Amino acid sequence: MALLVEQLFITLLTLFFFPVIGVLFLTIVLASLGKSLGIRRKYVALLLKIFEFVGSRLAGDLQLENGDEDEAEDETVIEQEQLENHNDNRSGGQVIKRDFQLSVSHGLTNPQWEPFKKNFELSDVCYFAKCGMESIIEDDVTKCFKGGELTSWNLLTRTNTGYQFRSARLAVLWCIGFLVRYFILLPFRLVLLAVGICWLIICTAFIGYLPSSPFKRRLNTYISLMCYRLLARSCSAVITFHNQENKTDSGIVVANHTSPIDVIMMSCDNCYAFVGQIHGGFLGVVQRAMCRATPQVFFERSESKDRLLVSRRLKEHAPKGSFEIAETIYPVAIKYDLRFSDAFWDSSKQGMLGHLFDIMTSWALVCDIWYLPPMKRRENEDAVEFAGRVKREIAKQGGLVDLDWDGQLKRTLAKEAWKQKPQEQYSNMLKVD
Image 1 (tube, rainbow, N blue to C red):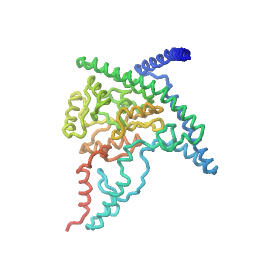
Image 2: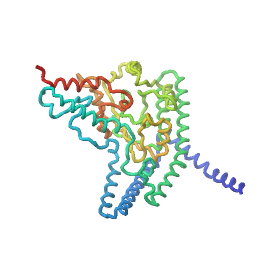
Image 3: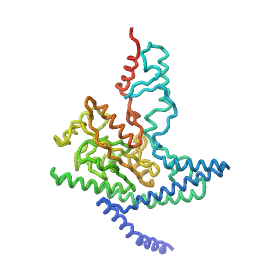
Image 4: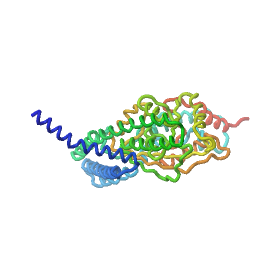
């Protein structure tokens, strides 16, 4: 019996070995050439149909539970609308309606105070206390820098709702999806990831020994595109680039940041030298490999001396005369589809390898990238105002929330400069005899 099982295993291994190797080889070749057979886009279209079916089944189960046919029909419509309007998930709605607000860019906002100067009243303290209590209940930072909440189930178990136990049909569908993701897609993706990382390390090490020349830059561009396209295949990435006429070959490109995966997504279409936070561990290995081929600017954001070096290193990195630092910016907006996977990385709760595992066990990584028109610095516009204007354009195109601060506020104390503007604005409102 044991001999029969062993022979059967060897036979199955022989039958599947060459097809699997052939598919891997074809994927690597297509990624190297920047070509695609369109299978991933058809796969994503099939997933959308499955999600629509799941939404209708959940609505049908709700009809049976409530015994109200009209209400169930309304729920079906709601499910479809939620599936179509998935891009609004992370922005979320306001729980508290504020009539008194404090912000870095606009200072304090109170309609009762704005038109005229006023005498100081002890009750004014209550407005500031009320604003502080509202921020404790619902702040603008935490809800925008955490994983998105899906309004419709995508057959993943990363929810505590327990949709897979609603009906036998959904349970079977979820089990099939689990087997596909963990026993077919995950091993295939892990092999592609290992090949892509090893190829990136080997190629960048080779390029690093070449003298600086146009040939080295062309070779680095080709190797970079090939490696990152292969890494994008390892998470079944489906990337759509918009307005490519605005893409630049030289200059400063600014994009919104979701996770280090953004580097892979953007590098599938162009070759970049990146500016960002330095990391250790697995991500540090990749960063050091990138630095061998072309100068990158990685620094520690918590160290002020490192931030001062960034400007100097940018000026050294840019060819003299090609452009003036921070005078022209090329904005890029990146938006991920939450229905297939959540690309947001909360580094305070999860390591990079865990984040990669979540992505590689998801359905796919569907991403839209918009190249926005270049933005020039206006006369009498300081760096902060220019950066804010660029940020607003990126947020508008990507359907993101435009905040005065970034996610680092979760880990650090608020700067004193952020407190001074509302203080000065309030003092200017007071009458002085």
